[in-house]
Image (tube, rainbow, N blue to C red; front, side):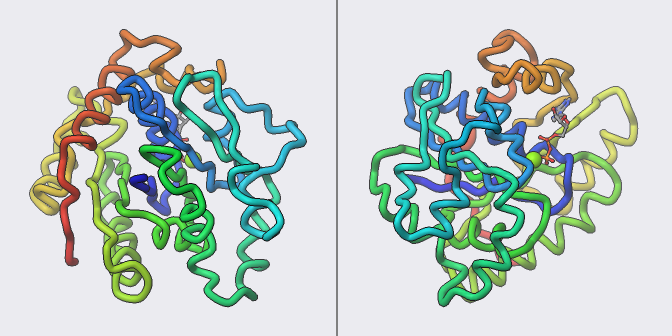
Length: 259
Ligand code: ADP
Ligand code: MG
């Protein structure tokens, strides 16, 4: 099972949208995909049609209670091939609970090891922070995929994230790679968006995916229907771009990175 963390400590850059739609796109390619909602807000779970008031176990329970294996937390979604480990608000307190544990950085990694090859791919929707939860996600992953909203401060925020990736590589998970940076909310008509695109490609070169996600209203509408854009409107630009991204992620060798 290949594990990809979708991470950026900046909120609203498209992490959840990318997790949900990439999961749906990979399922279209006949992959078995596990989506882990690792944000207490639970938006990835909502976007996959999960009802947050459902009383079942969530990823929080597997992280904190050794009696509950992760397999008991995972459920089917309405998309064939996409499975979900939901989050809930309790996850917001998990960092303090985990902080007391030995090997606190490896808790998620150990849970995923129990799954063996039940899934082809696991996508982790990270919360907008670089705290212990995100650290657990990076330690558990083969790759990190970084959505980047095209605006002027994007590069500054990325430096901090890349430093964190380097620390994780150095201390906990030497095999961690960057699968790529994904430009989101792209607007070709505005000079600003084109300028930032150019800057990011100059600065990070090969690290930036060829595929870009344009601003597309269907992407914003689909979650309110509890759907991925690929099931909601497969002909929309958003759906086509996320399917193209799945191809690129699947074909691309993970690019190694030393900052
Ligand atoms: P994050 O998980 O990084 O906080 P989200 O994926 O939740 O970001 O995106 C923030 C908001 O923007 C959501 O309401 C989402 O539906 C919307 N959104 C995400 N990507 C796009 C896009 N390419 N075009 C239009 N709206 C988008
Ligand atoms: Mg999110």
